[in-house]
Length: 439
Picture 1 (cartoon, rainbow, N blue to C red):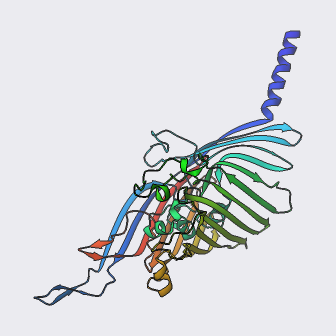
Picture 2 (cartoon, helix red, strand yellow; picture 1 turned 180 degrees about the vertical axis):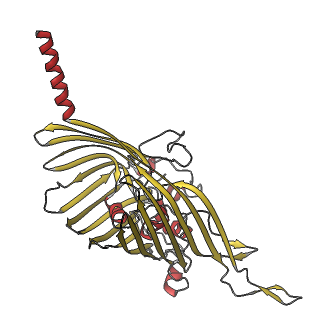
């Protein structure tokens, strides 16, 4: 009898412990048929092709196109585990492990083909003070680009603000501006994050510091040279291997009450360094976004500015691109969008634009030889919900490039030369037709 009572008590304790903690398996499987068409044109005046025949030629246009089956056209495909344990006294411990899925071909997302947790990998402690979160997580500045975009940064409809910051874009203009070097645009590893408690009358906030975990040397001359060492002047010009790159610090504060949501964010990402030259490069980003739900329509808006800065601790060395040290490549972007519920479905639309500054040489900038590259984009889509977990969707979008910008929706690169003629990127058109299932 006593043994039975002890067994029943043990089961009761186990039941209480189980009730105080939980683990959830969740995920999204999203597959889409996507098509891309990227057109470039010869904007030069007709050139003399044959002196004897007095014939002139212009190469016209050139188009690259591609049709693929891919994933994450509406929501990002993922697999995750999350859990929470009630520690009592208002405290709770939790974890979140989430990795991307390549369900279009069944391959893994990690080196070697296995699954990893590169989307989010955190452990946290929360209470009346808020939440302290450690690990890999979304950066504060990324949230505004995501939350205030009707397409949520997925598929061909994703806004140009994210593209300008180096998110999912192969454009060479962006590389010249330094934006694609930002590895902490969407997520940062090795981060310490703090979230305000949810009981502040609609106010919310997030702050993050991410370490680069690189080795520092004092004196700096002890830093091992990188692969691009300059033999003739190793004391000044050899590359140290970006010893400071990967650091991020930023924050986001906002207010959400009823149909209104507005938030301001700022972040600084260290994207490169050279100990020998005494320079540190950072991409500073700030953005302001808002949405308002009228019921029959929900409106979205955002403005963003990203600027590449260089901090030099040594005497400035003039270069052809920056003879006076004033060159700071930057990108201004903005978005206007809306969603309209229609029965079990949702119409999505957005117009976004980006304008680059100081991407050419200093002389180009002063004399106006190279106008600022710019691009705009229109996206339209429809989501039809078959249930709470399953949806069909379709999206079409088009990017118009101007003054040398070369942004794409994806797919193959633009043709840049044809029979010796320079081809300038013009438009990028694409579509998504897909299905999303969540669990």
